[in-house]
Image (tube, rainbow, N blue to C red):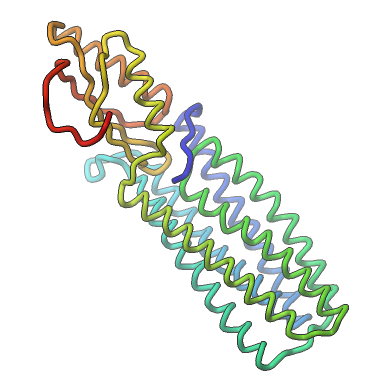
Amino acid sequence: MTALATTISPEERGALMRRATYASVAVAGLLIVAKTGAWAITDSVSVLSSLLDSLLDAAASIVNLIAVRHALAPADAEHRFGHGKAEALAGLAQAAFIGGSALLLLSEAIHRLWTPVPVERGEVGIAVMALSMALTFALVRYQMYVVARTGSLAVGADRLHYASDFLLNGAVIVSLLASMAFRIDVLDPLAGLAIGGYILWGAAKIGRDALDHLMDRELPEDTRAKIVAIARANPLILDVHDLRTRAVGPNISVQMHLEIDGNLTLNQAHAAADAVEEAVMAAFPGSDVIVHMDPAGIVETRRDAH
């Protein structure tokens, strides 16, 4: 699952996520225009593969933009836990878009293996792919920064397929250079096959991450350990068990049982619970934390080792 940020306010997180979606849509639009011209001139299947991928990128990025705007909407009377899972739904949509583009590319590449077509004006395709690599590299670097600060699943999925695009464009350049130098027409569709397989693998990875989110998979063990350490740092907390966590869009939800001295007053127990909740929310801004207080030593059914 996407790593979770811990030192950023919900307002700043939202602003970063929105800017990342605007940037990806803008870059995808520029690349579609450039690659359409390059494909019309070169008739290269590897350039076509890159164009198809950019078309699907644009569609996925628009879905992402809409999903992120929805995910950042505050909880309301009908959605008490917020709208964060819209990000995971966008991730599934991206996986479908990217997987579809990979299958189209594989189909075209197989067809060109049987009926090879010489690449024309390969230098035009190389120039456009070099421009694409430069724009994509800048976008991926910005997305990496946003994911590191926000832990956004949707932006992380976007970053993954644009990183794939960077490699794809590099492979297209190699294919065009080889086709121009050696005049071996099958090199172009072979590159398309390799790129299509890689894109399909990336789509599967995005889909798995989105399903993990929708199925409320536990957060990474280091995040869980940090939450337990925060709770145990309170001198009134003797132990922690039944810790349950999940991601809710860019935020997290935490539930746990805290063990305390059974002789404490209700006011003391309540104050300890509030202190732990506030400490966890300070470490994970925007998180939703619910704790249950248990007298130490009470035997009960426990769902996990904590």
